[in-house]
Image 1 (cartoon, rainbow, N blue to C red):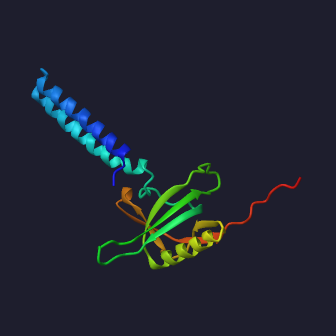
Image 2 (image 1 turned 30 degrees about the horizontal axis):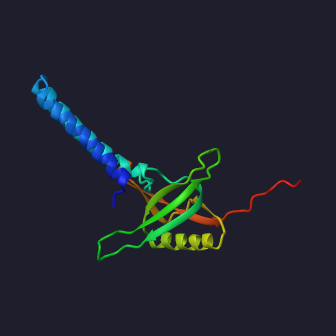
Image 3 (image 1 turned 135 degrees about the horizontal axis):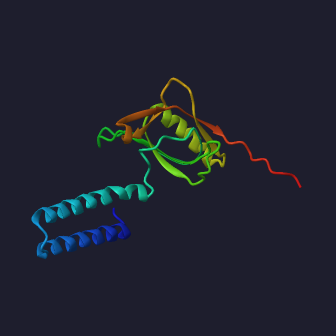
Length: 173
């Protein structure tokens, strides 16, 4: 369901497009210029429509997982043969790669596999027990999941392991 703010932005864009197109009808510009403006406005409408999901915080499908990350939360959608869905594993993580200052969480979407499902469910159970989880991409030969990466025209295999995060050391006074 589209929220009121998204619908408002889309309606505003449509109204601006209608205004531009109606001005085209009464202008003295040549028809090739008018036709180009109509096509350009229509293309920008599509571009803006498909640009909203990343702005809304939906899981990214175009970035690879960082090598080390803190697992904030996870959600698993199992494959459903009745609906024809392939299933997905959604991870909400914070990049913990050394030298990276990005401390804001990011959502990632991975394809469902049984082994990834088991690992994520185990890690989430530990999160529910208040044990922070650290995830790492390992050098294992067995693919655990795949990052949906449409920018490369394929999917990249990812091997994940989850560990209990060590307690931070606090300086003594």
